[in-house]
Image (cartoon, rainbow, N blue to C red; front, side, top):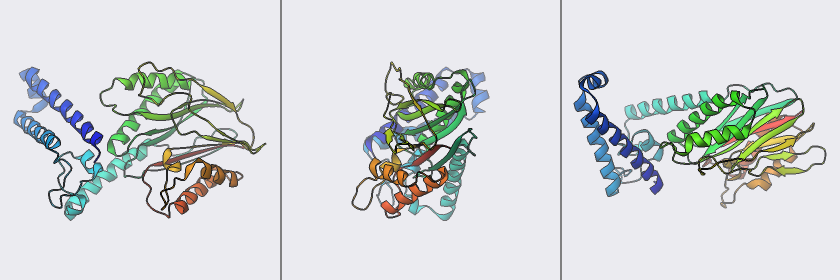
Length: 338
């Protein structure tokens, strides 16, 4: 388990210990009776568990299986920081309970993703999402701006697992709350950065591509905040434009003023958006799939419907990495002008 992951757990436990201690020291008897139902000793026991876990971080024994002395899965520690044995040593009943909890977490995250594609005049739209872990750190969504024009977002938080999934659910809430108040992708990201930058639970950064599409003028206004460059394939001249970042990732700068970009699309053009799990997939020789292979594959299938293009890309990645399990989440959006 990486050092920075232990530091994140330690930070969360320190915060939890401080909050509980402050509550017990400052709350009135009435407040304690209401919140604790005469179970103050249970809180003290919980504080002892937190202290014990912090001690394990200090002496380097957290995350070490007490049975085989191997490393406990990160996703397991994210769900239960007291975990002390590997999944393979769980009893059948314990595994069943854990699987039920993980399945519930996955269902919650899946419910946050769009259940169906929006209907945008003149656009063939398709999307695909597959987490490498049970819960992923990728996110995509479709929404509407203040003037009713459709918007789309694709984002990637570094890491995956329960904490990344929870962060993405918060991002979805923020975008859907802010979009009806503006017609500017840049304004949404500027406000989200202000919301996250001093939030003690936001310990990483997020890459985001957020866009507003006007079906009347066929214009796409966008901000690429440190995200993998989407590819725009021009049908008329066969050219490819990689839409490079116009702003840093969200959560890195105190003063954040993202720049917008704008492109006009024409019939047959394809906008292909993706997360880094696509281009960073590796084969047996540890070569990355890369943008060049991705571009060639899309150009070869540019006349297919959007959903079929995604299917061809997925098959190409699977063939490239010999059908092995991917090490990162994958999210793809194909936006094709009819």
